Image (cartoon, rainbow, N blue to C red; front, top):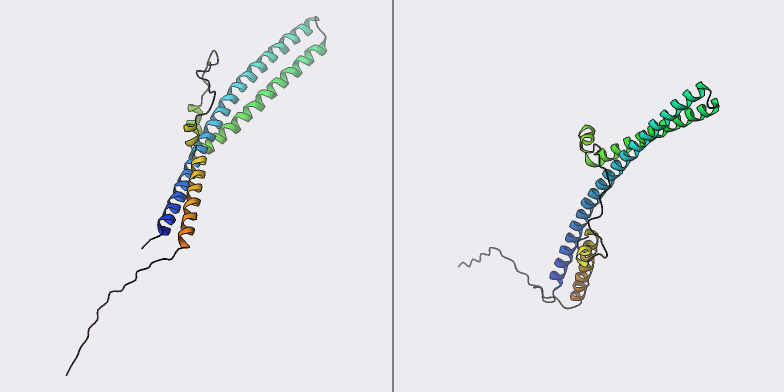
Length: 193
């Protein structure tokens, strides 16, 4: 018989710990989704930077081609054409470096998502947009309800509840306990005469 509530408090503490563990599992899922979103954003940004680097390399190649024509006609010094060639080579190197960075981002996204790389390439193919979208909302403050939904804060709240239940159980343990014991068995008495 649980007169002082010790067993009830221990059960409440265990339930709070179990709910806290579930919240931490949810936190792991949310963290994975956030990592996936971050990796996807990183890959898309890398693709935009790669497109810019390729356009820059093409522009530098065209400049080098025109500088070579100008130097061949005698309008500019050969050193100017050599500098344009070096600039074009630098542009190509930067584009190749950016392509390598995008490959690393893609591999990271493959590792996080578990999707085959070919499927991932189709899903993350660059989409042409003419302008950046404008913000559709402004967050001035974070409501308390939003904070209560965070799994890590919820797990901490459950830990506090578990500690409070542990304290109640320890407090109840100070009081005398009433224990009922019994046994059931077969007993046969025989009297003979």
